[in-house]
Amino acid sequence: MNLKTGNSSNGFTPEISLDKLHRMAAELILPGRSILRLLNTVLEFVTNFLARVLGSSLIRRHFHLLLSGLVLFGPVLSFWVSKYSIFANSNHYLYRKFLRSTWGWTCIFTGSFITLLSLSARHSPSLSLRHLSRVGLAGLLWWGCRRLLTLLEDAAGTCYEPMTPGQDGQSLASPVQPLLLLHEDQNKASCLKAHMLWRGYEVSQDVLILCFCCLLLVEEMCVFGHHLERQKPLQRSPGTPLRIIFLLCVLLLLVWMFLLLCLLAYFPKFPSQQLGGALGYLGWRGLYQGLYRLGSRWGCPGLPREGLSTTVHTNKQP
Image 1 (cartoon, rainbow, N blue to C red):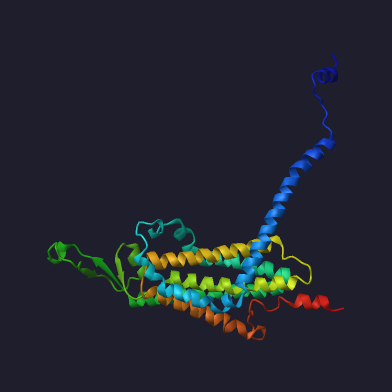
Image 2: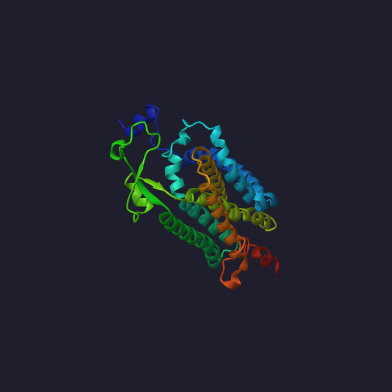
């Protein structure tokens, strides 16, 4: 018996039409396109709203005041938070993965946003490198502050080893545990690594870098709203990758502010945290309100908005 005849008698066709495959693929692709179109509309609406908020004069001029009030009055929340909360554990996932690499996360997301924004506005690699140098200078400032604070803490502190009550002849009921002074040449890192006590003046480097990164993110992202307004007359869209990176930067800003609030509420250290916040503010003030305002004539990268709006004027020329 013929094989084709046998298959036809059983109701099966060995050959599949290409038209039927195209129809099946179109039926599968059409819902996916509708979902992507809906997600793109939501992304545009959310990013436009966030760009309008961050670009407002209220945020640009007074965000540092909001952050200062959070640092000053945040420790008051320690009277109401529970010590059994998951955020009261210093080994929490957020502290281990984000707090210990704050500058790394900020550098990656901010650098990506600056690169895509400058390429979307001017398509100039030299302009992108010039704006990226702001992140490099900020990283250099953070590295210098970190080394200087470590040296000052080692010079102003002393390492102690707890003594057992039998070693100094005091009773077990002594309310104060005596301390044995160790070698003065030990630094803070080696002292804590040996599970001993370190006493001295210190500045909270965690609060310093969190405040500095929050101010840096707001300063860099507030330009996005201005960029959207510049693209409207040209009927151009900034593109989905730029909008996604901008949204991720906003989420990172919220994470940093949440971690800052957790540190102030669950681990209050007065006045080291307030000193750290003040140094973070001074670092931002010195860069964005001082050095970057000198412009490219002095070899400085300039402010975030400089050089990004020339495309509009260039395209209007005959």
